[in-house]
Image 1: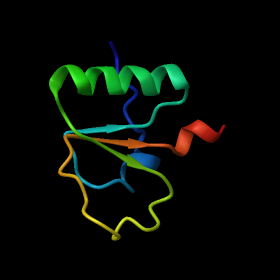
Image 2: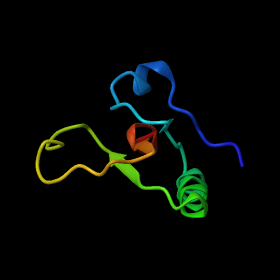
Image 3: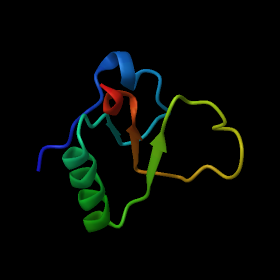
Amino acid sequence: ADLPEAPPEIGDALPEARFRLAPGSVEEVAAAFDAASERRSAVLVWGAGTHQGIGHRVDAEAVLSTARLDR
């Protein structure tokens, strides 16, 4: 399945990861998590970017931005 890569205006604000995703629908979110599950990869979900310094950040292969989900 084609995963929804984050466009530069979103991706440039995300931390480094092999995959930077910006799904625009629930179906695209599900596809991203299905692909990560198949690879046994961690996914870091990235909202507005606030409070990202709290707790222990996961060493993730993919960062999934929620920026396009609220449109």
